[in-house]
Image (tube, rainbow, N blue to C red; front, side, top):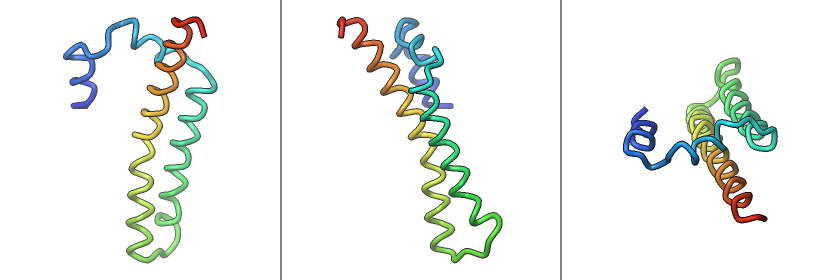
Length: 89
């Protein structure tokens, strides 16, 4: 939440820069959905099977990182594609 307030509240991104991330594109948002599904799959062994403590912590840590990886992917691809379109390439 603090990240969103910092980014949009202080005007780091204006409306023209936010629009490409909101437009659905399969190559952008489809990959982000797969990354989020991977995070869910990483949590399932700890939920249904007896895992050791270190394995559970590693799986939880990897799973907790996937939303940020998905967000990074969307921002990187959406803004990279919009900047390339503006440059004519």
